[in-house]
Image 1: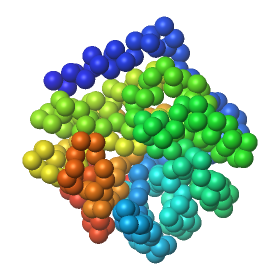
Image 2: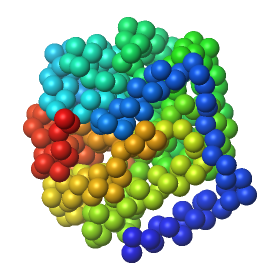
Image 3: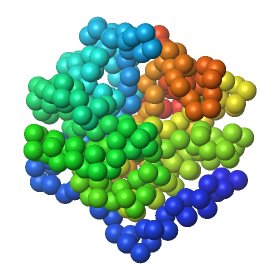
Length: 322
């Protein structure tokens, strides 16, 4: 059952069979920071982080203060020494300041809106304040998949950022299948590192499958991405939420998945996974889901920690860093 997905993936890959040479940017200017990123992938562990104090509703946004970010990163630090953010607004540009004080090794700052000059300026200012800690920028999160930008828009954003910060490694985030599309190749050839989202929880075959099959899925599709991209690949999102149990989302199954993933995908300088998500986000149950009008309890329960910063069962399966 675990390979029911493979036929559709193979069909998706067919356009690449004639031109399978992997591509990536290979620039001397970014190597010092890129080496830190690779080192953290190999011997540390990244976490995809949204602050517990950040909440977004239709009525407005609640933003975290620096103390709240500090308390978040203190809770995470025994298991993680690298942080990935989704943006640089709403206080997130202060994450490197706090991470530096706590002894984190690396921060990848997200830029949610690649057209927002204010957000770009905040991200670049944070990178300038912490040149040895901010190891890269992630341009958007599922921009092309979410139809918020085109591949051409992303290429232009990369070119603009190159001029403004030539020594800063640049990455981008899309679902793994989007990186396998032929039209992604020009963008892949410009990126210094790659972030990919790989969610077996969204695959129909996974609902009643052993959680370890989901880990095998992540390993397999990471290999497919590596066949088209030659730089470091960091799995930014994977895993599964801890509820509802009616959909076979439980703390025990979450723990089983992450235990299997770390066994089947030992981290290296070329491939690694980030913990996702750092914390539960109850407000996200009201995120709009296509075809679903009611709140979705799963959307608020992806965390490895609860919203009050308590580790879930899964953290017994992910050993603390030495």
